[in-house]
Length: 473
Image: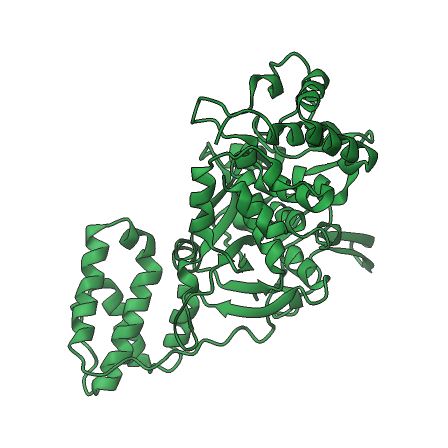
């Protein structure tokens, strides 16, 4: 029934003037709509009697939470995510406006989408909680939603953790995003996950000034948006460009929850959030989207006030049975380190020389296998050093890589499979806690007694066990 409701929601029009903030009044509008449609009137009455505006699932779909003074506050900041003028602070009013919106007449402006097209997950909620019969709704065409549905074709969901990248403050603690899996196969045991869809939530910086960058990120002055790109783009960005290992956590979500996630991500694509680096960041919003898709999940309650990506991975394991499988995808740098492990000193020097000059001579006395090993490692070195330049079409970087490829093709020996095992300590779910408070003291002959109070929130420190908090640093 749930998947059917979403499929039927793939049926385009804007908010009718009566339901927009410029209308004559929300209550009057909803009452007028109910007066002309007895079926809508019954739905509204049932929603009020059941107090569905306080339903945990509905609150998650609307991203409401209790404010400091006890009222409801909404996290999305875009103007089009709520149909009611009071929708940001009144979940019940937003539910009633949404129900009325599903029955609203079609608009003439094709650029504005009908509520049926904008909110397929909300429609599925109404079917599940109110027993709304989709066949009683006016039929609306939703070409953009239908295109999104066809683009995803998701059958499963994977959460991906990208390890730390200290050159970017926004990624100093790691990063998480979702992958919508189609489960396509090239052959027995060969998954085509690289053409699955990666769903990312990230900030859009508008300054390169380091101090201003940090201030705006901490104060929530950057805009955060959901976006979707093929997974191979994300692998190229994180594993290749930034040399960040990826951990993939395949989730055991039922088909209805997978469909709801696809529908809700579509809804989130129409709005934006204020991005806070320490709280409402990439990992927070990813977990919030998962909770909206499956109301039985309890994820954000297992994350502290400061949201650390490694901690959000641990939250997955606080839900028994949620993680079906864990896969490790090494970065370009990790692959290079593995590639050079078996090389002799003279071969290592040759790799470094070839990374600068693809015409550099190979060590004397190497057989075809040795030449292949050196050239393969040199290609990996160029990919690590000039990955971005290669993708951006830099002529010098492309020429250097092409010359190495030509030399490698002249060696009639295939490259053996490179097995890169995951770190022995495992992924971030096996690491120690991210927060630490310490109290100590002592005395010295010169300075006398002293007290030391220490506090650490996220980063690994040198005195700690090297494999305690992935990655080892």
